[in-house]
Amino acid sequence: MTTEIEETLFSSKTLIDFEGRIWNIERVIIDHKQSTKTVYGGRCEISSGKYFETGELILADGQKMLSTRTYYWKSVGQGIDSYFDDGSFFHSINLTCSRSIAHHFCADDEYEVRYDFSKWPLWVAKWCVRGPRKDYEMYSYYSEILI
Image (cartoon, rainbow, N blue to C red; front, side, top):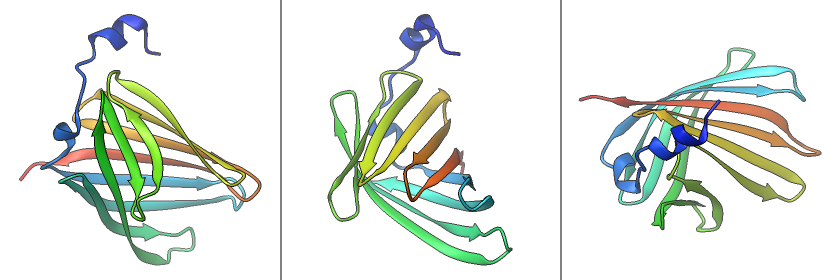
């Protein structure tokens, strides 16, 4: 549990802290509606405000699929605004504290993400997605790949 003192002592990050690095991603997706678990291994690069990840999904039945994802990150105030690849707004990432929460609403589904930067440069994004069509948790663990 984070206390107010821990939050105050956190060294704020900026978009620059994420850029110019290659990040390893280990991800687990637990789908409560389907009672399945999917794992993902990949990497991402954040450069000139573009977040690009590529990797491999391993479905519950063992089937493997290549996956890519692109977002655009824009530095705003003391955080980052994240946009889908079509330019529509996704959510804001507060970088003034070691742990932050953001929401995104898509039709009847609610996406909540909890970022944890307390062990920087290791960081975690935990998504909880709930709605009439979706009920899953996604844990993404990021670690810097040193070259």
